[in-house]
Amino acid sequence: MDDYWGKQIHVTKEAARRQVEIYTSFPVEKRMQIAAEFFDLGVNQTRAWIKREHPEFTETEITLEYVRLTHFLPGHMKPEHWAHFEKVMRQRIAGEGKDKNSSTEYP
Image (cartoon, rainbow, N blue to C red):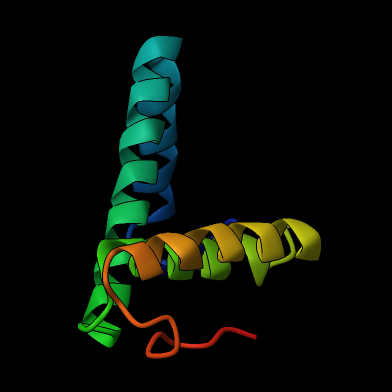
């Protein structure tokens, strides 16, 4: 394991340098495709983790928790925007037949 870009990684500096060299040689479209696939992987893995932690959640509740964890808590979403989003999502959750008081309360 090496220290590269200030982070511990499981490849050598030479392997990491070669990976960067290969990726930067790709056309912009290919690099964007790779970035989008990594983004999707991150979203899907986070949603799967939420589902494991809260198996009782509906897909809508998973979305609510995902947005809370990835946008609101880190400060990427203004409190008033979060309040509106949460209100709209709670209405959807209630419409799905779940008692809105049975759902997890968020700070």
